[in-house]
Image (cartoon, rainbow over all chains, first blue to last red; front, top):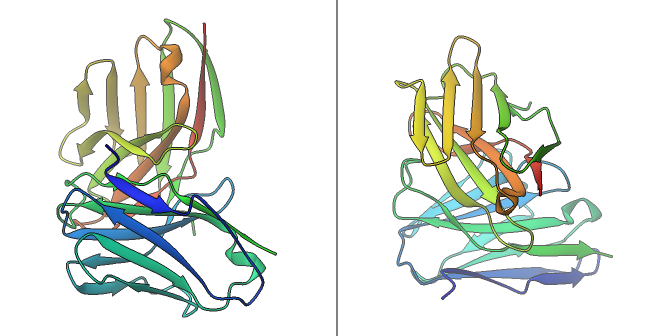
Length: 114
Length: 111
């Protein structure tokens, strides 16, 4: 009974070829987050949605965009992936945006850029 | 600029002994701290948290200590079990804002 599902688990894309990563949740949580984690580094927040309100981090490159068509689904679009975008992408959800509300993470999608 | 640092990339402990994982932070405005645990091929899962108004929080075998003057956080696991082998992430937040994570410490508990 997976609660935060990420598809695909592994994604290979070519340099400059747009790619979309998918996240879905069965928890009916208000908030959905996207994190980028490069090898041996800390997960870094890219953006989050509180319901339909989009909140972008100041240092998230314009190359990264997100869509949340409904409560259950959230997508991460990378318009023109570069070699530096190869990373694990983690989706998380929480009932509310405050840290006291636990974040539930999916297993991640590992993106390779060739 | 790493605001949350876990300086030990890995730690190896014998089963039954204490595991101590450390975390240092630079932002004195952080007011809430969390530990997450991650097994291979799974996402991180919440383990334990502490507010800056406390200096200790305990949950079973897990205790988190906060030393605000030293800007230091530690997680104690007693007794350590082989199933505790995982990556442990420290995270912090300011005034209910986003979480800032450390890079993680790999804990290996040997039986």
